[in-house]
Amino acid sequence: MVIALILLLVAIGSVAFHFWSPWWFTPIASNWNYIDATIIITFVITGLVFTAVVGFTAYCVFRFRHREGRRAAYEPESRKLETWLAVLTAIGVAAMLAPGLFVWSQFVTVPKGASTLEVVGQQWQWGFRLPGKGGRLGTSDNRYVTPDNPLGVNPNDPNGKDNIIIVGNDLHLPAGKPVKVLLRSIDVVHDFYVPEFRAKMDLMPGLESYFWFTPTRTGTFEIFCAGFCGIGHPQMRGKIVVEDESAYQEWLKKQPTFAQMSSPSDKGVQAASAR
Image 1 (tube, rainbow, N blue to C red):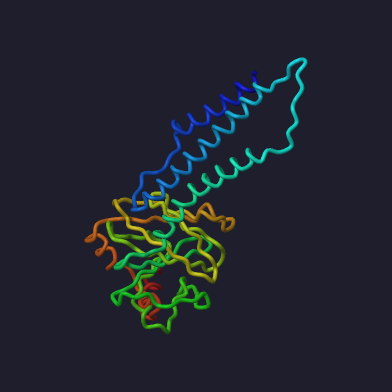
Image 2 (image 1 turned 60 degrees about the vertical axis):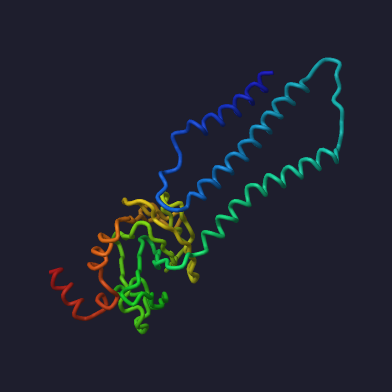
């Protein structure tokens, strides 16, 4: 009897803690409210199953408790019970997977007119590359990575000359405009994650992954690496500043291009200012 009550209290307490928990989603700042809805659907389904299983266990503990003179009946299998369990499990799994597949299809279907942003992960900082006036990103390769070319932009590709290079500084984006995010790693597996955007994906060495999102409100949002990438993993953070279009264009004008970073005259000016 006591064990059955404890099991019921565990089920009730777990559900109650979920509703009154101090830990919940951060306020969303992108178009991906579908992801929140999918997670809530998963919570509901798993919560119902958890409550049903624990409640049934408590019932069995109470109903079939030891009594003098009673013997347990042995039934090695029940095709009817197994069929019902298989059908209900299949329905539950399908109900959890279907919304996720729907959202994933949208997650990788980039709308026309979206701007392009490249995110480069390396131990232990974020780098960003934006198209310049030409509107195209140049090719890149890890073989080109040097102290003067930290993102490995191909110096022989004319499309990369006007690319905006940002390493170790905040990234700015305009509010209300979709952006395709290209993800690339220079060394190990990283994971680009901004909680408020509900967007995250791995950066794999030798591969290029992508997703897209639309910032929906202005503000400053922190970037985390959600994949363990070495001893400096906790310090691999950055910031995205979402602002209106005019402020974004003003910021963009002040950022160096790849050609400026790699030009000898520019290096001389930087060396002189460093003295």
